[in-house]
Image (cartoon, rainbow, N blue to C red):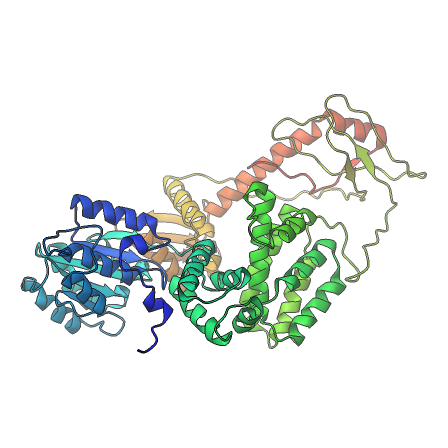
Length: 576
């Protein structure tokens, strides 16, 4: 008998065998048990997470005849009746699967719908399953709308897609939609361990963790990679061979890099980058692994109890989390994500990798002066004088400034006493503060009804990450001048924002948010944009923070008794 790949051999045959999609299984199970059946279902989600599998199980649930031939609609198909066996084998007359990726025209859809007028031959229901339905043409969608909305009582539609945004709203409104989620690495790991135990394949835990992360939420990809790893490893799964097969970077390199970045050790950063090049390890994989480690560090820093103690790397990640401040972890994570997109732009990806790593080192938060070299500490020309203060316990919203004592010939350390509960000692670096320059304040925003509507809508799109990059800037910098039922007029001050691609993407984002309108953009004076409102709100918070600082008794004593100055730009609001 020919070998059956793991992804097919261990494809779930019942809802109880499915993993990682409990929300979908529960909803469908309850609907089948109560026989509250919809006429059209839409399953969405990325590849390899069970869309087609759910469709086949649903078809068996609707047509199961039971072991004795007297069964009815059930949430637990028997798997032994003729209908269940034929659906599993792909030969059930009343279950039709159409691949819309290769059969996307109106003729193919009409040919399928012609079968709808005939009652089931073998089962209780006819089930039409259309995979990758978003690939259908507009005429094909129009051809199926009427039947999709009011099918015969014996007909059920099951649609599946990896890109629901390309499915017309007229189709979405006729379907009961279920979003299948990418599976967590822990879920994939647990299922792989079960599969390999059933197969009698020896595997170590570290190898399974690598495969679970490499699958990126897809169980089918995880099982396919496991098949490949078994062949590559000669019938067993060990971490070194799996890492070699995946081209994954050894986490020890990541730990060394992150520790060097935390300590500002540029020499080790460059040497580790060179070692990655010599070993032929992927630059993209390096940044990906760094992002994963930094993400886990951020979780440990925010919620120490959330650490996965079963992972052998958890102790090292916890140690690194102690070495690096939380804000620096967030910054490094962001730079790693953006750095991956730059690798393809450089003539040498390893040179690009080195630049990204040096950028991580150059933008360390809290650095006072520019480093002259990667290994030398910064030298400050000003006298080495610092004021150590013990401020009283600050009320909520209290803002601590950077206070700059005037230079003294003997350079003493000043420790003024402050009444009240004391907090930790704050060491304030000395810098000569230039006098602030006055700048002309922009004209205040004059709120309008259209501006209120546009501000709320843009804020929601930004929060949901429905718009990014240039599209986000177009939305933030524009003013909604007028809107009617099918057309909105925006105004921007810069012609560079008025790009056709940005307008089209903004229109698509608005359509997904429920506003199917045409957009026009003109260039002119903008008086009420989301960006100006946000800037005005930020300026107001800054003014309030400065008033708190200048009115503070301790700050006034420092300025009066020691000639201290507040460094411009050092006052930041602590709450938004």
